[in-house]
Length: 403
Ligand SMILES: NC(=O)c1ccc[n+]([C@@H]2O[C@H](COP(=O)([O-])OP(=O)(O)OC[C@H]3O[C@@H](n4cnc5c(N)ncnc54)[C@H](O)[C@@H]3O)[C@@H](O)[C@H]2O)c1
Image (cartoon, rainbow, N blue to C red; front, side, top):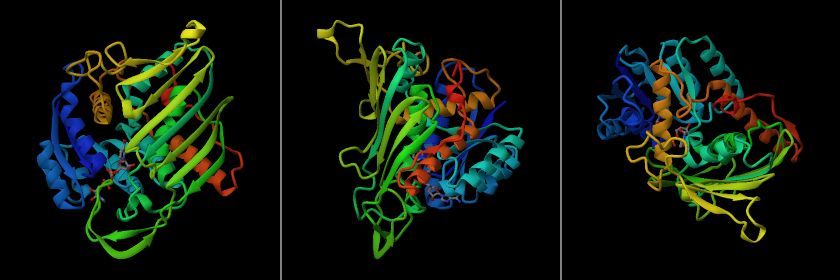
């Protein structure tokens, strides 16, 4: 068996998926079937060709339907703007492809629900990429907390600070379209939301105090295609920014209190998911700016010596041992590695290999819908001047025992 793969969308995250499929067979055991890198799909042929050349894919397709129709392609990542996910995912599932869709699952709850129904009706694997679950330091903190070493979780504080929209002359793009909540909250707040649940071990019960701010109210229209957060030449024409540069809200994880703030105009933070979690017997904290380490304080230490200690991730933590070529302490990891682990896990499931403790399978579309229901509750709280809004009850797969 050979697994033929394709990536639809050759932008910032699409390139990470393209690289991850290329690296997949070099991680962990050599039990994965050969992976054939078939196509990178992009409506802009030059972007698709550049990515195909760079990552060693056989061809590019400007219409995703050619990928859906190709019997040599079995597994496909969908890595385009959120509002385009549904049509492509439904078409791929109908064609029998295994699908790994980027977060957030879509841009509307109706579309996300339709995608869950399509996944339920499909015989193939449908998964969502919640990449930060694959961060070794984050997963290490989760294991420490779920082992009970820190006792009950008391409260959680999380941020995702990014500065990709700080320049008022960076061009209008799909990320700035849609109402409050479809901006920084959907883009980076989606990540810190599932991380908050993963770390506290509890799903959101409700949110309140939501606030959205659009700091830069209009942006210049680009003269060419825009990808990721990179600059492009711009025209004199300005267009209104429709969504949030900043979002903040209070969280209730069923008795565990929390607060979350996210921004895409946070100068000095190119991209930094960070959190602190306080527990009965100590605390832990993480910042993406120092991806290869986390900090821990244990109340059992003598009072005068108590303080956060820094722990470098290594083979005694998730994802490193047997996963990376150099699986020694201190070798460090980055966001690209998260995609490597994620896409390897997806291909293992596609290949019918068993799920392992070292490499849990990817979350499913119901988890993606739940993530969007959290975002929707924050949006509703914002509309109701910060009122408390319940999140529909759900236990995401990443909170289930053994995950
Ligand atoms: N997991 C993560 O860490 C992470 C990071 C960044 C982005 N994302 C997600 O990845 C998705 C894409 O984001 P991005 O930043 O890579 O976007 P991007 O704007 O950089 O790239 C999107 C690409 O899609 C192409 N495209 C547009 N319409 C298309 C179509 N119909 N068919 C094929 N290609 C099409 C564009 O030409 C562009 O090259 C989003 O859902 C985003 O939320 C996830």
